[in-house]
Length: 486
Image 1 (spheres, one colour):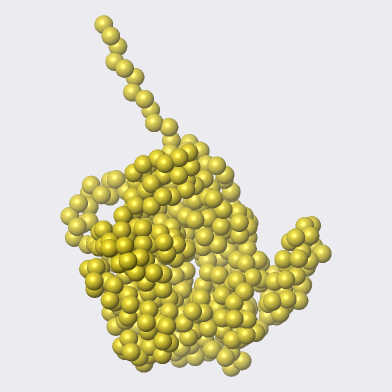
Image 2 (cartoon, rainbow, N blue to C red; image 1 turned 180 degrees about the horizontal axis):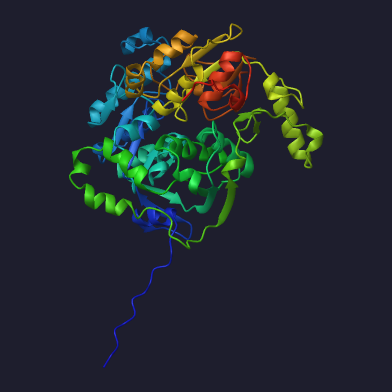
């Protein structure tokens, strides 16, 4: 009698492998595949050329229902400047917004514009509207599309020509990525949050440490994070050189999605959630690289230079060139200090700030605003500050914050309460730094001129930003947190 053939056991897979294999249309070479793209985010800055390309070649959007459009990068955040498109003071921004409106109307694309409560930063509104779903592929003409990887989603930024290609074909040629798992053991200390963890990881592996990789964040500390915290981590993966950030699906993921999903998903919830629960790296899966970090070692962080990996603990000092072994590193340090107007060996708590910005796709969700508001506790912005602004990531975040009275706490303390948008994150709109101004910012990049020509940016968490606003300088929130804060 013939014995039954032995069933082959599939080797353990990483989360990246699972997501990638689900969407391969065709293998093109040893290191490139044609991937199917499920969903596409567009906004006013990187889409006009793509639509013009479609128009000139006589093509249309292949799947309009897969595209979600909003305005965020180059829109004003002052209410009186956005009552209508014609109120936008910057003529280029006005033209970009008007062009997007015309394009989405022509192609039947869902659009959330100014005045719509669902308008906001693309990487905020996607998740909160239940549009970001586990197991999908998502692209946008913005590098911080990696944010959506917090949902077990293969999400990455693309160039304008790729925006056009996805609109026309729903496919994209993508170079295969290596895998890097960052395992974070234990729990984060009190008053240390996801933004601190992100900066700590970037400092540990370097701003080019993730080049060519998808970074998967795992471990007890990551499992303990909310979805907002996980989005912050994946958002900042790009600042370590990676194209993709990932977190496996768990009950936290499913609960967040279920609360926001539409009827199409909820009508098939049991089937969908059972599938999504498999979206994590298998035990024994092999990664190209692994980094292990102990969560107890992570302090509140502040960047001092012109790259996100130039960061130190809030109670630390700016490094000295002579302490670095590598000549190239010494030159980079000296160049950054010259731009930032700082001296080696300076304590961060002795560095004064001119402006404070709370917002961006990194830290503008309701959890971020709650964290910042708890740090206020009846105190006021320092009189030495030129400006302190809070910019909610979306209209829905703004509404929720106002229902909770957070806006009153900010305004009573001396912060400006703005309308949703990218705002001072990138200095593209009217919210920007002037030459020489120093900013404590909850955004994601501190490059030269990122927040305005000649502006000096320091990346911090929301609570660190509020503390800097109150004192007019950087402080360690572990020593400053109000005693009665919850």
